[in-house]
Image 1: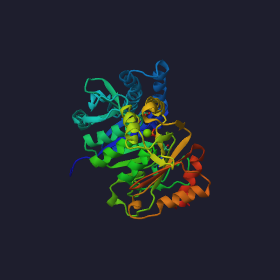
Image 2: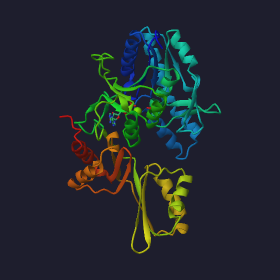
Image 3: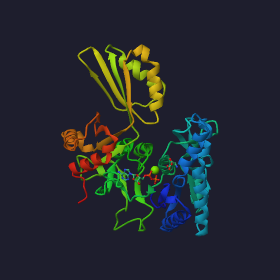
Image 4: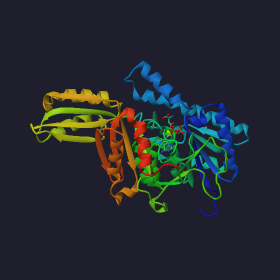
Length: 417
Ligand code: ADP
Ligand code: ASP
Ligand code: MG
């Protein structure tokens, strides 16, 4: 809006609010942003490690715990940091107040543990900002149709931040974390990873969905749909919000904003994979339906699938799920053994999925073959392959994760030299 004050959402992840000193540093940063003349809305995660601790408490009582109570427990981590940051801001002379999800309200569906956002009423937050107050919203949480607390899935504060940015029509959503931007791959495992000034929504969505946890996948999808400008930057390095007119972090943007188009933009890996092979199934129509129907009914998410048929009239079906879904997948497959008539079920959770992503793949061939050649030169055996328009993924033994990512990073010319 012409003449109106810029509005910025600032989201701080777990390590950024990891202790009282970090919370004080974040408060200073928020104060500085506010002093540039912006309206500021803050979203916080729980202190690093806190959500895991709370999940651990629930698991210790019962593995199959009530998901409603799970949510009311794990949501408390964010409530603590929102209050603490509000106090830290007040101490610096900044008018601030905390908001729990239900106080906004951030309405979600009733899928406890992985709820989807429904509607956000931005009126109270806008009213707050109009009075010069900085709202500090607890991320990760909302309220379900029955008034109970819900959470948005691990890493969900990113989604809270993007959704709030859309609800208050913010000019930008800044995601502060422990790295200074989005890199060609996880900078913690590849020292030569290069920081990307810009990345397309589509590529970031794909990278997040195959394991780059720098942004929660749903937050990227939402930003793409709502046209929210997302920047990823560090809360650990000091510096102005703008360096020589350029933003200091990485921006997630539309494809037409990218000047230099590379064949491969990024590489991600996911250790949260398990492989299941069903061997020697009598080959007849309806086999896939008889296997994957019950798995879907049991809420097992299936990812990569290969079917190979032998000369003897039997077929093998190999597919992957997340490690969490593995026990449910096994018990489901055991329950259909008599009807599917397979001979053997073999599972392996010691695997990792490596994916290369880039919009350039749409128009250029050769990405997959470079991947296969590079891995074969390192004697890394590929167990399963899957592709999409802008991605190639392979499943390899977990011990090769780092070697494979580094070798591919070099092979696609992504190394920062
Ligand atoms: P937060 O607690 O701030 O939400 P996360 O741990 O969820 O932070 O996400 C930040 C981490 O994401 C980084 O520390 C980094 O190890 C990891 N990461 C994975 N892939 C990438 C990538 N391509 N670019 C930057 N960071 C990445
Ligand atoms: N605290 C939550 C988690 O650890 C949400 C988040 O940090 O985004 O998953
Ligand atoms: Mg995160």
